[in-house]
Length: 406
Image (cartoon, rainbow, N blue to C red):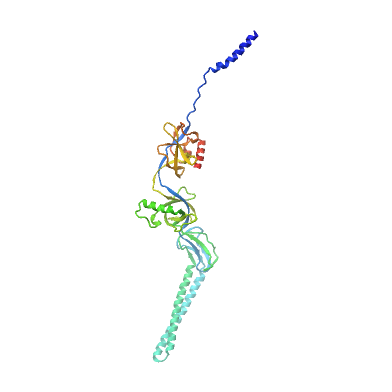
């Protein structure tokens, strides 16, 4: 009896896997298509540019020095202020010069009195000569004395003018309008005139200002030819006649807020760099730009034309190729090779490979691949990737890394 029970249990246990194998497995659930953010390329009217680095320089720079010797009595400006031509800057002690003028006037008066006496003596001897009361030699000597004293009077008059000019020079004025630097000597110091005269201050003009930058000689010729194609009938004989406009900005400026006009290029090419120094000029009546400042310069190389722009974070790299992922109406992802142009903010000009009606994956590029089907969420193309609310954090970080590689 016990033997039969054991045989039955062994038989039942061996049949259990067979019964379990007859059941059908549950169907596998397919994951939903990944969600991505897409946008149409943006169309803009833009101009092509060449970018350079340059610096601001003053049109005129003057070192202020004393023309006469004297002690500085008063300084009439503050360091760094804007001055106008003729403004009083330094005033030397005038008493010495006034004393010299008085002495010169006294010398003139003495010479005039002597001249009157000599003229009377000459007239008297000339009359005596007719009556035999004087010799011809006496008359000639009297005439020479009168002529000499007349020249002495004129010389004393010139000395008075010179002394008055020295008094005028004791008031040192600004020779041009501009911004003055710091006073190199303080009140009470003695200044000399001549080879040992010290520097009192420096003035740089502020209106207009020059912008210098090195440019390739061929590029400069190309700019002039482009100007002819834009409407000028005859090729300008000088760069100034071309009236080529450039834009520039300081290192801390957003974009290129200032406009200047090319007016000069050096005639010697630097053999070490193959560049030539070009110059642009711009009015600056407020004196807001400082000579010596570094600037970023943009020179137009084409007329305004329509371009396609895509967020730079949507552009991917495949070795030496650049591409974007596009999504068709059915949600299928495709690989699209492109050629890049200039960067404007965070939007990149697409030179070729895209049309304005295509949908570009701008966020979620790391979660999809060509041939895959996705759920596309449409947003406007923007140069601020963070403004797309559907972007995930990891997609934004991946896009930033791709932008750096591109």
